[in-house]
Image (tube, rainbow, N blue to C red; front, side, top):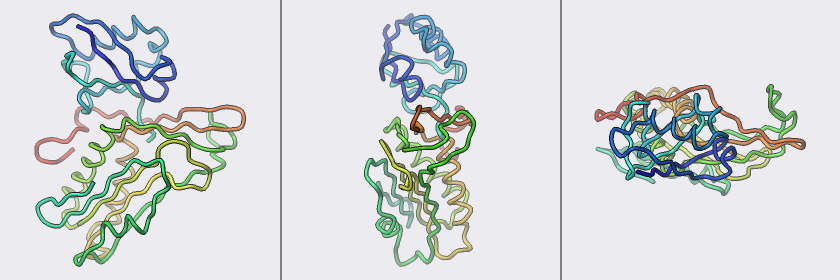
Length: 248
């Protein structure tokens, strides 16, 4: 059988395409066998495969996870770093956008008669990173996402927050995509509750940390002399998928 594989960030650059196809035996095909076939058919990808993450149908997969031709399979490096009503008041807003976002408008989505406080985190593009291997001066960032999986993982983060902090009544997660200039917003996380002492500070910190761990978004630092993809160090596993109890 032939399996189509989506590629993102550095893997897409290595292959020169966002999609590749590999042929595998029709029976007992696993992620491990898929990776072996990718390494054999696409030598440019082989050096990156030991640290590559795999998703099958937008869930993190292990080496023994079975794979079929009907599955949606994606390979990507560690990530750089809607609204619904869920069994009572629990407001959510998840977005991937190439346009600047309006913080007041997002706050308004989390507001209501039971909301007395909102804590938020806003990320910006720095002009000087001063990290080894990156351009000395950053002119802009270029963000890319595995969009369908990213939206599902944002919803998972909201469920994890609700499980850990039951009195949190709203969660917003927003990520910019495309080219973003120095000083512009990149990421926004907000948590709402009746007042400040119901865990919203801790939940907002958890939200941005978790977004950097499991939401498949990557950034390329673009400098005057070179551009570099920035990869994270956290490697999600099957345990980072949401279980039937609504917990990671």
